[in-house]
View (cartoon, helix red, strand yellow):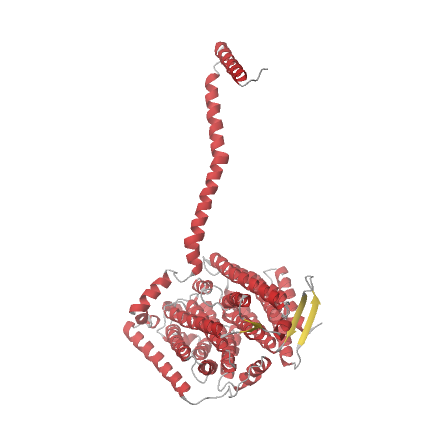
Length: 622
């Protein structure tokens, strides 16, 4: 068997096996999911360490379309991280699901199927094959949300996620169709040999592909289902695994694959991507400041992080793309860790409301330590991994000649740290509450994956020499992206000083906010009531910036009401009115039935005379 088939078909068959197993069986589901995801990870590691490009092809779908898999340098890297987070998620869920009321069987079924289709998407060398796996992920996103049974709105949120992603994926499908038609092939290797210039129909195709990719990374305006799921109490393992880590890996992988491997971008498209990145980065980070729910705050930060990767790819230079890719890899680590800490706290306290939590560092020291490491990493504090991905990205932005975007990246880091200072202070270092007093540290199944993610935050930091040399440099070489200067290592200079100044600003902001309100979970409130920001936040609360809600409110619901009234009218004309007329005539006819022979003969003679008059008038008798 070709090794490329293992991470696709082993989780798939194991998922089917778990579905057939009784819900009452202990440990069988958990062991099967952990073993399948672990073997898939080992196969991905073997593929990654191979110096050769591994391929597999099989006739499929007719019309000369082949089921083609190919593990090149970019695909190997994405596969390694996708299978890695799948394994850690399965391991964590074995402990987390013990206290959940929703079905563990369905959870592990969805987890394995999602892992299987993710592996298929990153290994596909044929656009049609890739589309099959890419579209399939939408189905399991829906079932993940439905069967997770977060809050009372989980069904509506699942439908919202499905519709948003289905519409975006329809654009993606059209983009693939146009791309294949222009290139004369659906094989990505063949398209790469003669890259497409972004002009005419190719420009339209690229924009459609970009819509699908931005939706996959939960970029604005396709993010709202994720933030709603966070507020509604969706399964924390799901949030860590799918939108927190896996979607970021798949989305950025596809962004690089399309933008650099298949297409040649021009200055207009570069500016478009980078502008979109800044909007996503700053707006989502600002929305995180307003949140008082642990998971919803993290959901907005996860959305914000997508902006960094968009900015990196938009630079179209080796340094910027390396920074964007590094951000994607780091996102899969520290966002995963942060959502796992949320799940750890929620499993013990049964709440994600920051106002009800406090002082957990005494009762959950391991979870607290992981949160601190991950929060410092995502806030770009040196020497953690997030700092180096930000520094590499900023150097790439300056090389591309966009100083304003450089400032936006720094501002995004400041806002992110302010939001996480509020979160960390409220949950872990504020005064203990009644809810906190009943908490204790989570079990080892939950602690171990969190610590692995935290260790990776440290391992990928301190100069970032290992990840840059072993993960990023090979990708840059494969994509023929030349760079003159060293990417890894500490760069003692203005960028470091600017970062330190940003950290100081964040700390001062939190101290001021806490001093004004006296409550850490309200430490950012003074920013929310600023003259311009207050209006924006009010509009956001009323979902003005949520296209799904606005379209539903302005078009779909009125249209639905119109068709409902039309259906009622049809029912009236078809059933109610004929029944009424028939009943009325029947009652009228009853008045003539009085047993009077004279009455019956009179009616008969009148009827006969009317009939004869009609016949004579219209020539009935010739």
